[in-house]
Image (tube, rainbow, N blue to C red; front, side, top):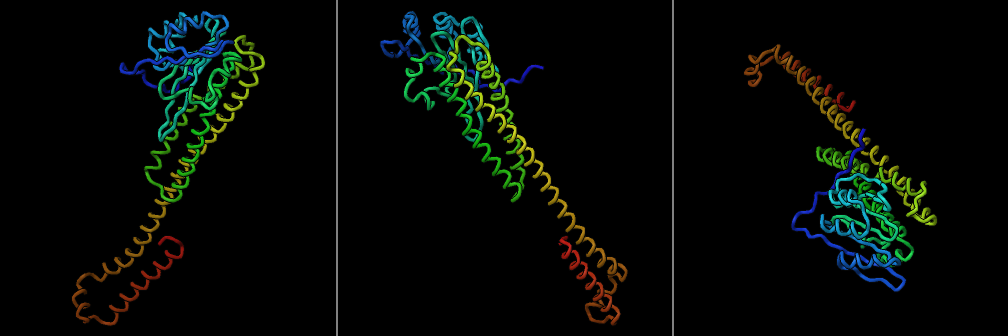
Length: 336
């Protein structure tokens, strides 16, 4: 069975211009590369290590960069289409890694992040919903990582990306806790709608996060020449974080299911209480109505003129007393 693909963002609109941000490290220092031509010139230096970051890449830009960096045309096509699932695959001398950044601001959004690791370069491509330059690891600049190798910069980016999952999980966990409290206090249809929305969010997270475990399982357990041996431990730490996140994800899914069951139980209990009260009222009124039906409405005029005999008032008082006794009994057993 074909694995499910996580939701992806829509392709950029024509008004969104592609943006290229690139930096080259050499023993002589670090310099910015504003254009694809500057990238080509810098990559010609065998001692250079490059990080090329593309936002809303188009066909021409990716073809140009692919020709410079030696990226396979099929990889460039996958990056342009932006409809991949999380994966890692080798294409020639490069590794193509697809991951997802999670953004939660009242509504969950998964942004595809394409990463290509080569011997002397790292290419990242994404939409505007996520910016690798804002990651905590890169606040002091990418040159500190590039000086150690492109694989070290890869770790800095994927580690920051995975660390960004934890605030999303914390916010979803808090929302599930609030929904559980609301189910007990005031169960409404809004709670059901929100529970189903949270279930959809958790399903989206599962499709985005769970396959990423296999990515780092391969990077840490296979002989990969593009990843230095001393860097395996770093990627194993990311793998451990993903294991923890997937465990929390399973717990959240169980909590949502349990909360939905609790809502249904609460609604059924409330319905049962209503039925009990209606039954009690019916029993009381049925007894009074039965006696009143036997006597008939012909006695009403004499009763209003106090012309009835003592027997009428005795029966009437007995009926009222029986009704009061039934009401007291139902109140004692919790039906009223």
